[in-house]
Amino acid sequence: MTPVKNQGGCGSCWAFAVTTTLEGTLGAKTDNKNVPRISEQQGVDCTLRYDSGGSYNSNDWGCWGCEGCWMENHYNYLISEGAALESDYPYVAQQLGSCNYTKGTDTFGYVANYTRIYSDLDEMKRIVAMQPIDIAISAGNSVFQNYSGGVIRASDGCPTGLDHAVTIVGYCYEGGEVDPDPTPDPEPTPDPEPAPAACDVDKWWYSCTEQANRRRELFVNGECNYWKIQNSWGSWWGDGGFVRVEITEGNGVCGVNGYVEYADWANKY
Image (cartoon, rainbow, N blue to C red; front, side, top):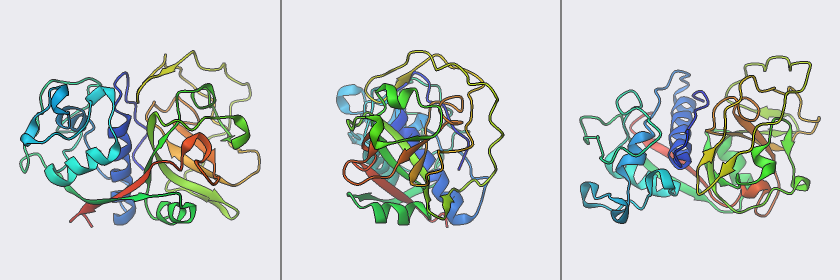
């Protein structure tokens, strides 16, 4: 996986979930740990609905920029128009008011297809063992926002209303954790650190005062049954930018089973 990113004060988690998924997919299928970063800003600027000021290539891509989108809408855009690199179209955490992308000239690659998984934990595990998948999750609650380590369990009361997009990068089963990055975590600091400041989530975006030197916990209470999820709120949040969520049937803890997709590149491997 590419390093944990920070979407800032723009409701662009959907773009980050898509690009993180695509980057991890490219890395996994080419056995390359140095894949380039894909542009999130392109998604923010170039997929706007007509009623939000977008009319690029005479298509209404169905997104609201910093006010949110569904990942499949962005995938449809990338299938048609192609993806730019972050180095060519850098992220600024706001809408620029124009799409500064030229198809062909600025194109790194195209998405070939994306697939939705409906309430099938075995299929989710099968795909995650090969590549990351993007999901929607319930993040506008204290259980998720205040997470700092361990596993969020069904008994913790995290709701299932979907308001944020993230990427599942691995899962833990009885034999161990399936994780694209096997680098050991550093030893936890001896003293617990204070809880994060009050944060708000509203329609796919996150606003919170950043807090450095977050504690990273080495253990997860000895129980191995969880998804490992990469967020886009910076590496200071959660467990180095990641969160572990218990694997359950139904809607899933924090709604993780409700909206699940994965994608493939065209002509990249």
